[in-house]
Amino acid sequence: EFLGTTLQSRAQAEEIESSSRYSEDARSIFINTLFKEDARLFMDTIAALNAMTAFSEAESYVREHFGHWKLDSDIVYKFMMAVRRKLR
Image (tube, rainbow, N blue to C red):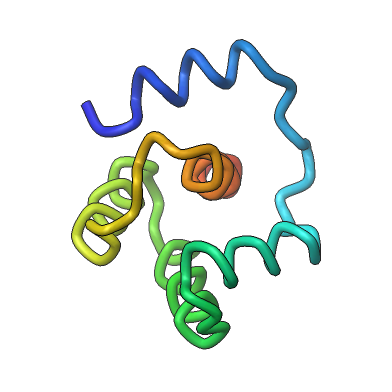
């Protein structure tokens, strides 16, 4: 399962920020690290993810469009947790 076990165990192990908005620091880190400094790609990705209704859709989207991401990294985890909070 894609990120499933990792997300669940990490979510239990750490407190997750309650805000559904991305902080400026997080946005900056996501753009610079995951999106290779491409703010437009970040915004387009967020728009696509915001249109989804289930986390499994978001997982598939990330797998398809960002297969080069190291899925077990902290930054990808934090990004996916922000997505997960939005889709709840």
